[in-house]
Image (tube, rainbow, N blue to C red; front, side, top):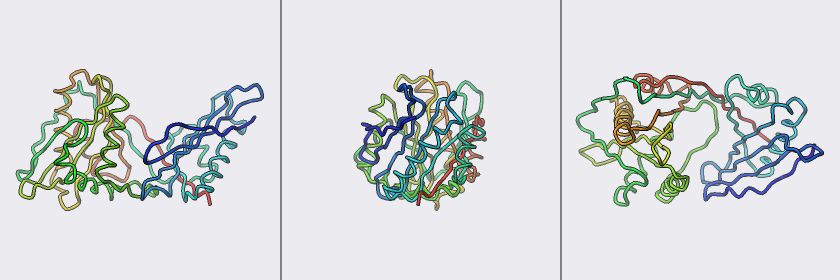
Length: 287
């Protein structure tokens, strides 16, 4: 077996990847590993691992050899932790646990079938209003909206050391552009306090450009001082009804929520989302 470091062209303003390929003597691929290195402020301590070995070649040391390369590179890049996500009960679950990774968090994945009869009409507080847009928020609202993204800062995620994403308008625009470059559509529903005009919460959804298949929630959050008033449920319910009307061929909505985030899991259950599977986040200090 030989392991070759590869050059990965997938480089963005906020991250890049290191890559390795494991091959046998005849040059047949056995497995691969990627280490994504965020470069944005607040996340430049982190490495995100993706590792795969062909089922026929497992238990022969391929995964361990690839992992050794990743851990060494993370240390050389002065990353204080490496995080990997694996499905509960999968071979990767046992693999990481046996190699020094600690389980840092558990995520619950759920899906809402849009052909279901689950009621999604929810009335929000009288002193708030909703705004909806597709793609990047308008220039005149961008500065006000980016301030609301801080509502994600205290989102519970177990012991996982993801750091804090520092948002500004250029970063928000780059994220919207990345979605559009993939041929997908970013849909945002936001809540505004009527008296102050301030954004207090939002929920984002990304769907295929042709409006088919399942769409993926990218985030839902409400500022701490406005919680406890049903705004998160109101936002998601309004988003559901909006995409049902605008994209009648859309099949379902997908979401993932940390096990510790009981409030959001209750919102999802009340709106008709049903659990599909769970994953674990494992974390390793490469030093």
